[in-house]
Image 1 (cartoon, rainbow, N blue to C red):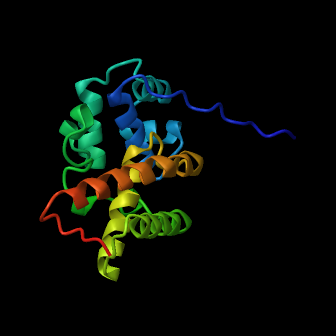
Image 2 (cartoon, helix red, strand yellow):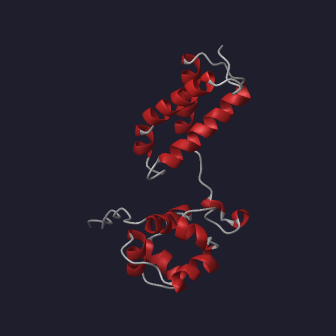
Length: 178
């Protein structure tokens, strides 16, 4: 018997559609039909909202707020946090760190600092690594796409070099040549 392969999802046409889809991803990437049912509407409606082809009604926005704890202001504008009370966000909503990518980012940070002649204490290296990793995820259109993240490492390297060069040219920035 041949298995049914789901058609890949179309990219959202609007920022609102992207955020609606991001909610589902952050909550475990539940199948669309199951997710829509839990909110009290149909999967086809959810698909139209997530693709940005229809604007969700007040009833739909209220369901995201009441049933999932989503901050409607974030949903509509992208400002603030996804969850109205981040401490009540489900554990599955917390993004996990990709260890292999985190190591690659750490090696990149260490190499670029060395190339720029900047010596950092170990704790500062970890801070720089975490900041760089978060910047990489924020830049990605799909932070769960390992290929996209790997492709963005060149962007990250360029960004880090520019930032370090600017910091060494400004007195009082705390970045010292080794």
